[in-house]
Amino acid sequence: MVDVSVVPEQRASWSGKLGFVLAAAGSAVGLGTIWRFPYLAAHYGGGTFIFVFFIFMLTLGVSLLVLEISLGRKTGESIIVAFTSFGKKYRFIGVFIAAVPFVIASFYGVVGGWVTRYMFAYAAGMTKELADGGENFGAFISDAPQSVAFMLLFGAITFIIVALGVNGGVERANLIMMPALILVSLLIGIYTLTQPGALEGLKYFVVPDFSKFSLELLIAALGQTFFGLSLAAATMVTYGSYMKKDVSITSSAFQTTATTLGISLLAGLMIIPATFATLGSADEVAKNSGPSLMFLVIPKVFEKFGGIATVIGFVFFLLVMFAALTSMISLVEACVSILQDTLEWKRRQALLVTVIVLSVTGIIVTLGYSSLSFIQPLGAGSTILDLLDFLTSSVMMPLGGLLMCLFFGWIRQPKVLIDEVRLSGEFKSAGLWSVMIKYIAPILLVAIFITSVLKTFGVISF
Ligand code: PHE
Image (cartoon, rainbow, N blue to C red; front, side, top):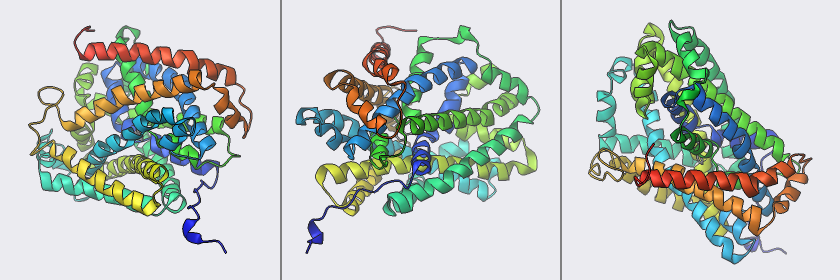
């Protein structure tokens, strides 16, 4: 007889291609897509930023996605064990990248909590209060018990879904939330475009003005490619490790990228033209295009819609919450699978430790707006959240991406992964892909990384 206590838990797998693509797109499409992309686009001159972002996504983005998915599927492991399987001395690459989902989840849940609170506030009919230009928002984020409660509520929903397992929880949640999200963003996008003055804003949003091109724009577009596609964050490797051997990696990666690009554009369409119409000029949009765009300006935009404002506000924040949830789920799933595979823990034990760790770090980040607001790590007025956001999207993710490219470009050969991709179909652009991993991506990443570090330390300015 087999002693069941020593039989390892069998690795879960997605039920098919759709399950994978919806989960991967669910991870990719999140606050980064709906909140960060529109304000970056607004800030960097609309069409010009979009143009550069598209190029990055369809070259570097897809290539890295193929790399991560195939690494996960080949090894059937999450990031640390995946790298260790190529030799103990490469474990550090896995460990470095494994830190990313823990750090992102710590601040992602906080913003998720803000979104949840806005959804409830609209449901309670607080349309006017939310549109007061920031007082209500400021009071909320600096109210420690309230903001901690909403962060924990958002976290609890995530943990319950992850606890239901890869198929019963993660896959099913994405199967419901992703189509809903696409449909609702289409509806709101169309509605806002019919508002007076919106077409002028649409022009600003889509027509590139290349005089706006700058090195800073390039860095921002690169950071958004990493953050927006959940790259170098251990999540796509974990999701790849649940992929069956007969599902095409190339077309999955392409569909995931295309969905993310499509929803980014829709999010921009929902937000930029209407904001343009409300604020009156491109300069005003750019000036107001910080992180506060979604929480301060959008409610003002909605208020102008009259009686329907409350419904639109509620549906919009419900949609943003869905987007944030599917990403948070992928972050937590990555943390759980890392602990499970690396320490050979049971899933339950790994989940419990993840819940405890992320609750504590999430509370610390939330308090960064109240009792811990004296900690201003990036200069006056900055918060712990700003630091963690900067550390991950501008430093750790590009560096993690670089390490992966150098590893599969030079220490091992790209062929190791190309063979895995070919198990489930043709890989016609394998040659191009190798050039990308070996040369283009590393050169681009090193160049941009050095420039941004030099800029941060004031050695150069632009
Ligand atoms: N891609 C997510 C977003 O755009 C964020 C994310 C990054 C999720 C890394 C998982 C891993 O919101």
